[in-house]
Length: 155
Image 1 (cartoon, rainbow, N blue to C red):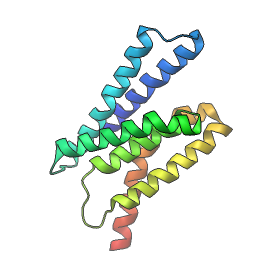
Image 2 (image 1 turned 180 degrees about the vertical axis):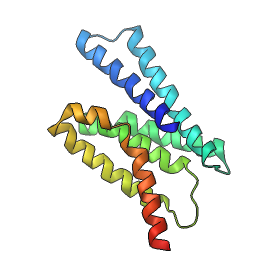
Image 3 (image 1 turned 30 degrees about the horizontal axis):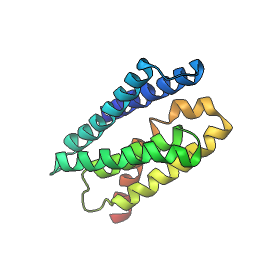
Image 4 (image 1 turned 180 degrees about the horizontal axis):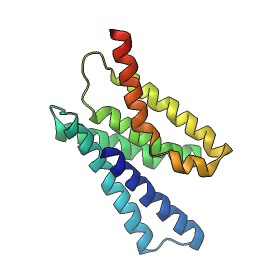
């Protein structure tokens, strides 16, 4: 469910940016689409925190949303594209919002998010269409992989 909210947030912003770049101006519908995307991203983190039975749902959601908002708004200026910063924002927020059980570590999750972000940054320059399609699905999957590896190495 959280992935669906993240995908909807991603596509709302991608559609807004595409329509603004095509028309050459920013109008009301562009602002509404970006607003929808920025509204749905914290919903994804709320779902992650609730479904993982985090003990401090509101705090985890607020922290995840704040960190993701900073990453999603400032990193595109540094690297010049929008796809991999979204993956970094969704993955980092997800790493914060998910409950951490003893063999799992937030550091392992953040390393997985960094790997996905670098991978997407490369794919954006090689096959932009493919990067647009896979970007919203990889970050939360990387968190699953990081937790799986952490649990396998602990046992």
